[in-house]
Image (cartoon, rainbow, N blue to C red; front, top):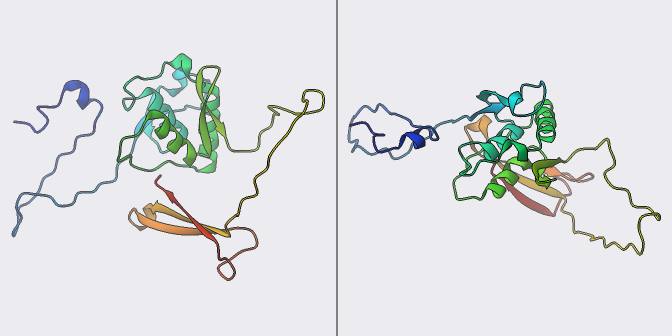
Length: 212
């Protein structure tokens, strides 16, 4: 009997199955205590030509945040895949190209229950973006300098305008915990100092745990 006989055909197309060949030696009791592997996502990637689903017809190993974002919307991970007509293709393609140029990657493992929106937010963050809906379509806002002004407030279109500015107690440095592939995918830390501060004079620290 095969190990996956009880797995439906539909499920087999959505999950990765792995076979092991283990040599029994010494006091091995038939139980594998620890098993680890390096997995890569095979997802639709942008061809760089044109726009829309036909420009994403080829699949390849990719860590591009935009490709993974789109896969979460349309792929097997989503029990109710989003229709192509409800995707802002132009913006996601712009984001894909920008991430590729900057070398931004999304590498991580989802180990607990998470809503689609939560997963989209985590993936988008790795590409310096945030998910949002524009005219009923799934899109992103990219954290970069924009060429066009979206909204301008002047005395001609604003009356009685008020604003509140919060003055935060900004830390001197951020301790960034992350999984470092260079040291065998172990948790590592980098300290990012605010301008004017260094190891010599920084006293206020905050810690951020980057899971991806």
